[in-house]
Image 1 (cartoon, each protein chain N blue to C red):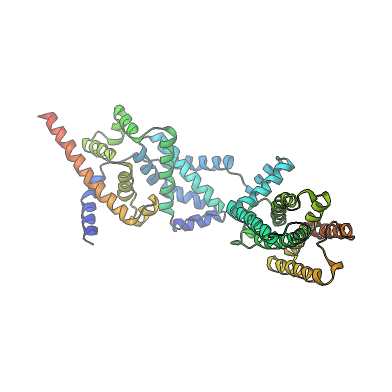
Image 2 (cartoon, rainbow over the protein chains, first blue to last red; image 1 turned 90 degrees about the vertical axis):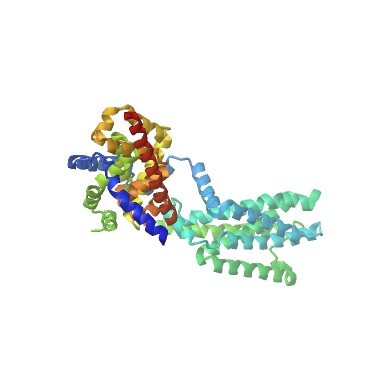
Amino acid sequence: MSEDKELHKLEKKWASRMERFTTPEPTREQTFMLLDNIRNQAVEEQPQDMRAELEQLQKSRTRLEQMFDLLASQWTFYGMRSWILTAILMLILTISVYGNDPGESGFSLWLKGMSFLMIILIAYAFRPRNEGNATLEELSYYPLIQQMFARFVIVMGVQLILALPLTFFLLGSASTMAYIFGTFTPLFFFGSVGFASTFWLGGSAGTIITSFLWFMQILLDGQVKSFSLFRLPESDWFMLANVFLLLLSILLLWSIVLKREKAGQ
Amino acid sequence: MLDEQYMTELASGNESAFDSLVFRYHKPLFGYLYRLLHDEKQAEDLVQETFLKIYQEGKRGFIPEQFKPWMYKIATNRCKDYWKKASTKREFVAEDIYDNPSQVYHIIDHQIERKWMMESLNHLSLDYRTALYLRFYQDLKYEEIAMTLEIPLNTVKTRISRGLNQLEKILQENEGKEERKYE
């Protein structure tokens, strides 16, 4: 308090002395000129529509660059740490599901584990984050659907990057193109179900539906073998089941594209 | 009308609200920048840059909580950018002005006391000077200075009090030198 009083006294003492340092003052005409200059400069410098400018910039970029931008924006928005955690989680679960049982039965188990992992990761990658989706939708050039698809591609991409070498590692010389196909299809199927159901019904409902499908599959797999989606190449119905899954996945993804086109008309 | 209300008007498209702000603050802002830069042309340029920024932000819909500290913050930052960009340290600016007597006389109106005050203020560090200018010449409250310079309230008080004490010492030294000169 006393410091404040002292400061007050000091200021009072200096108030008149400070007046000795005066400066030139702009005239009224100079103020009018200043206003004119600012308005002219603002017209020259300031883009009227930030969105239009962004769209113009995007148009000047190649398709590949645009796709890269989209993926990079998702990577940046969710952060490096978030995506690395996704990859680490995938790796840990993959190894733990596989356990110490290499060979064909291990592969089957591993495939089931990987597809379940896909459900978890879809839920994780599409989790709400500070209404970020809505913010990005407003601010960014990319529509929400494109951003969701970019995240789907990242999850699938990371999954496949991890899954393919592990297929060779698990099966060694037994690894064939059929095994690789048999690995990709169920993963793609559960990824597509997760993505499509999230798109149509929202994040929570999407996760519940996909998880339900996966648990049903595990349940049926033990009881009714003919309904199994996780088939080994040795199975008679291997090719048919996988082609069916692939077609179903494409149809699910296509439903999103169709909805977009319909909305655009 | 309050400054913030003018900004709201500007954000809603009323261009004349900006004119009112310019008419209200052209002189004080020019005075502040002139005291910092000691260069009429440069002060004019930075005044223009500051108002341009205010205009653009207003058009974009930004309304500051308190206009005055926000405006002086923009001006102070523009000044710092200028010093950085031009690599012209303020000491050099201060020296230049004394090398050019006509400019000095223009500012101080041939009055030795004013010259002393100006010299003495120039010997203070930029931190002390900005705090003193904002308090004595721009009539900002302590809280507003704290917002402008982005420093705590107590630091503002310390800077003003220490700045004034240092100024006193410098003036006394200058006085002593002048007296010795005539002895």
